[in-house]
Image (cartoon, rainbow, N blue to C red; front, side):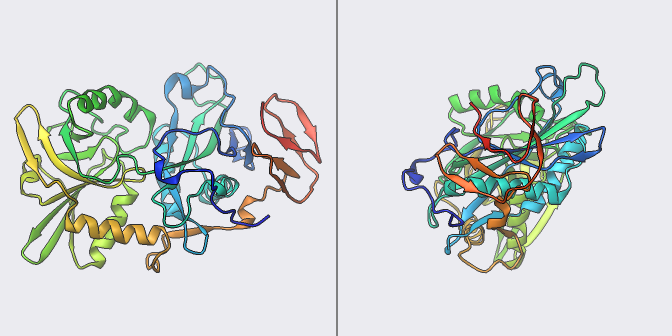
Length: 396
């Protein structure tokens, strides 16, 4: 088998959004058992579905955390991950917020690379705007009613082909004023579902009113910028020949890896970077505003509106010069078009497909991937124990 496999020719890569397709080859799972204090070796499950206990704390108490990173195809056909170790660190920060054991960085990397390599044909061709979106997810998975630590946790990694979340054209944004995203000293700095599900009805309402992006102010004073509902905030101000880039400095926001990358690029351009409180009133003096995130990439903001005060700050119908430069530089590094001076890109290799306990996998598309035969014992989804060597097949 040739690795990496070429991109599927049957997919219209230019028409992808972020809709879920069950056509990918499968996902990765690993278990943590409190009794052993370790994570199990990852397994590849040729199905988009998982079996979990209905009384697990993830479903009942929201004990879960997630990540989002992406892969692109390089000019030589390589599959490039962007800053995966930074995502591993951020996931552990989120997991700690909801009392989930740490996932060692090397284990995170092994699971992510396994999921990506086994879905390699779903990485778009080089030159396409499409991407492979990678969703690591960790949660308390054993049946457990008391509000104490469960006995088992599950770490899973899914992969989905898609495109930029909001597109690339400037969009209008508004401030959400009847809902606070995160309380001071709460979980605002973590990527946990409880920070996102409550926002849905507010973003739906805003979208119906013509605002495709929503912005949150700090909950304590409602005077300072925190972040957009799905992405980080970057403001740009030109002072003569100097470009100043400002980002919020708050413990209540998710530390955006895309934002951090933009700031590193800005400094390499000779621009001034300021991490500090950004008063809402300062927004009227900004020349460009960007919503930044893994799925959103760099989205130019056309305008910011605060309904209660009827303030509206307009930044333009087209992408600003500084936003375009940052976006182009970041895009070229991600896709391998230029040298990566920061060491951000991690190439997925053929050996990342291998699992020591597997003989071979029959994938949904019928392609058999031969792997070394080894003696082992695995536990199937049904709980039955099978002695090796075995053939692991797609779930029904």
